[in-house]
Figure (tube, rainbow, N blue to C red):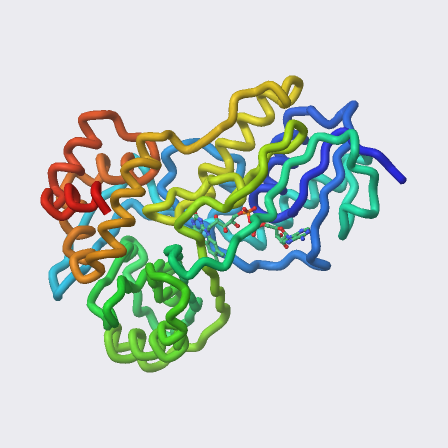
Length: 355
Ligand SMILES: Cc1cc2nc3c(=O)[nH]c(=O)nc-3n(C[C@H](O)[C@H](O)[C@H](O)COP(=O)(O)OP(=O)(O)OC[C@H]3O[C@@H](n4cnc5c(N)ncnc54)[C@H](O)[C@@H]3O)c2cc1C
């Protein structure tokens, strides 16, 4: 059986980002790489959005940048500006196409469906397939989004809506998220932060139809694309092994309070690439302990006080947008953290320290 220097298990966002990073930095000229991926064809299946607080390799896969956004609660709207860190949406279809085209050019890179097709004994493995235990105590961000098209101009594509809490909460945390790609096209997403034992929240189609038709007051539109997903708001477990590193969601690259993962994956890929020659002895890359600690408290508050969350999010955005964006994107300094923390209801958060 064939042997490879490196194996990437899972050719999704993290696996392909890492392979691409290694390829463009010429780390695979004299080394071989096997990518183990189950899917038979790559097509658009996700839209990755984030505030651009760091450079990445995929500016040419960006569908749209925004410099303004809004947050809504109880008919109040907070308009915010984000010109210094524009919000970007990446089309996964373009991302897969770009990377796969580049990887095909290198004869040292091969794709397989199953790791048992090769000899993995002496390889260094990057694993992006998470092991997730079915535990109903864990919180998830689960959502469904549709891209819609209208015949006449309807959307203001200069501003996107990050969170609209003016929708049924059902004793949980629920909001809509709207990304207007143009005046006639938008992604409208229903998002829940909850435990997954409650399937009653999964009537996504009905929620989206009701929001578009009765909240946005849009009657004539057609759905052109749909995506559904669930992001774990906890770290998947894995066993430490000398010749293996977990990457992507499996490697703890999700910011637990927000679900944002894409840019962390890009930073992790760059880190691995810089240290690839000595990867077995390189310090683990992780989201800083400060954010892990603060997110843990935040999620405890969310779990115990779902009704307070729309107000808590709204209050958070009373800080300067730049501060909030840096905080949510793991780039804030001590004073910026403090400015956010001081906006939070103190007693509720102090109580959460003791749950
Ligand atoms: C619909 C959706 C939208 C998201 N939107 C955003 C966003 O806007 N912003 C953001 O920052 N994050 C977002 N995320 C979170 C995160 O960025 C994505 O989940 C991202 O794809 C994670 O990358 P990954 O490589 O860890 O997992 P994936 O991209 O899911 O890659 C895992 C790969 O492993 C393959 N695989 C699975 N099992 C096996 C196996 N046994 N053997 C071999 N291969 C296997 C899968 O086919 C897949 O290709 C979103 C997640 C989802 C689900």
